[in-house]
Image 1 (cartoon, rainbow, N blue to C red):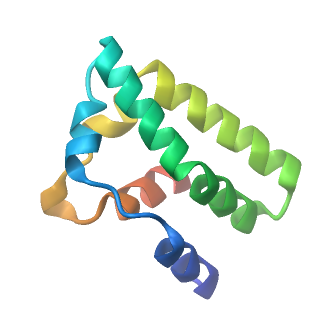
Image 2 (spheres, rainbow, N blue to C red):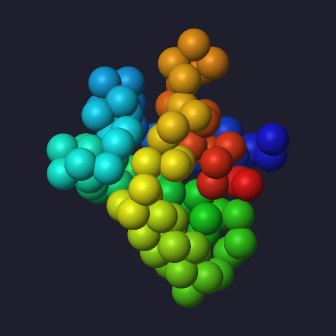
Image 3 (cartoon, rainbow, N blue to C red):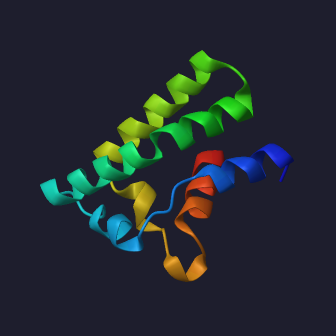
Length: 97
């Protein structure tokens, strides 16, 4: 992990696991919960991509793709597990891959 990654991790907001769990599923309530997560993490995710690739246009495109995937399906949230650590660490790994 380079120093920029560490700074990005510490700047991310805290998320309650109940919000992550509410985002699982395909009903309207799950979509609303994923939207809340998307709004909450918008800046952190965009800045993560920007720090990684140093191109604002490409970072915006990556963020847009991430947002669409998150809103279309709960696939990103299905493997999140509070016993394995913080949600922000899980999300960082998901973004990296």
